[in-house]
Picture 1 (cartoon, rainbow, N blue to C red):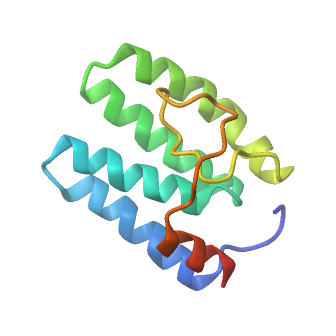
Picture 2: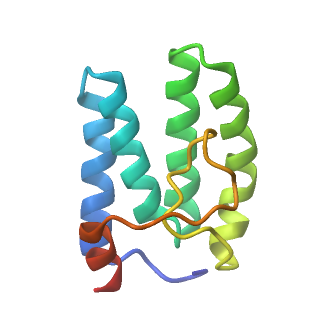
Length: 115
């Protein structure tokens, strides 16, 4: 998706999820919002990388070494994977999920990304 801008609807949904992840006090809810933002951002290099940086920051804040290490690897591969269109669709982006495993895309996000 090099040179292609994120459509306005996808950008608004991504920004909403990222903002919710920053502002909610519940740790599990923060991860859910970041996971949804990840699914939305996968086709675009910078938003995808930015999402993994936010996941890394949350892992550090929670002192989760395994997640933090997994996010470092994902930060490195996010932009090239997006730029080349080689990313596992629907993958939540967490270190608990294999890096290349596709996952089902939630219906609301599938409709957003299809439009």
